[in-house]
Amino acid sequence: MMLFRYLQEKDVFEKYYKQHLAKRLLSGKTVSDDAERSLIVKLKTECGYQFTSKLEGMFTDMKTSHDTIQGFYASMGAEIADYPTLAVQVLTTGSWPTQSSVTCNLPSEILGICDKFRMYYLGTHTGRRLTWQTNMGSADLKATFGKGQKHELNVSTYQMCILMLFNSTDRLSYKEIEQATEIPASDLKRSLQSLACVRGKNVLRKEPMSKEVAEDDAFFFNDKFTSKLYKVKIGTVVAQKESEPEKQETRQRVEEDRKPQIEAAIVRIMKSRRVLDHNNIVAEVTKQLQSRFLPNPVVIKKRIESLIEREFLERDKVDRKLYRYLA
Image 1: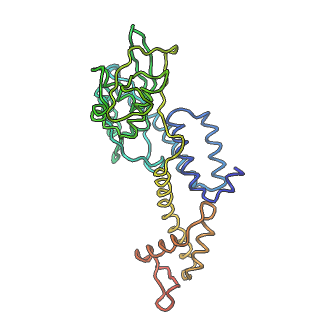
Image 2 (image 1 turned 135 degrees about the vertical axis):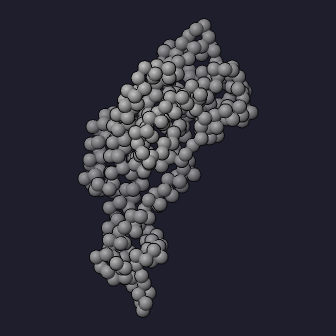
């Protein structure tokens, strides 16, 4: 917390902290909910309710999802035995890190139970919409290899979609896998790399053999796969640090989130002052928001202009640097 107090851009910290917290919650890797909540309480004391409201919303969603899935299984009764086991976390848009809607064709064996859950959820909640975030899920698969050796594979949802294709064939090209799953190319290559190129976890074989996945590669089911462990966790090869486009995207999202906060501060100031000149507005807004971030004067000017267009403020007819609040 001492280091945190020295940060000028606390909202950037919040953005990255939220991403890491989401991964821990969804993958069940939190040391304890109490430890996570303890830090959130400290952040709340330091920065106020607004800073941590979305983080607290993430914990609320996890609790609500647990109750929802119990209700779903109770409604299914004995019929549930005909389907794979499904665990769903329903995440509120806005509370969790923004996720772009990704395409991924789920296996037909999974679609049945997914449709059942969708019908149950939309039947108990009105005016809501469900979008599957396949890039955030995981799955446990039971696999039988050569000589009848059986393993339980813990994989990502993308990896599950790839492996299920090999139930009906022993060989698939990269293009065939891409066409069948419609997983985004960057994610597909990382998933295939994890399944075919990591020693001790290579449940698939790749030709030609290399560390990188190319579009003209072919993949085979590795029936000679062995492991001392019954349960084998296959992670996804990830970039060690954020790429430049990802950094720019995060920065852009931060800038977008700042706009309504700057506008709210301007309106609060003008509501109490009624009339104020440009330099004083910039100084007041900076003072109000510096506990979260240092707003750029150019951005403040643009937000003032936006408020004038929407008739919250108006310029003085004589002094153009003077603004009036419109009640």
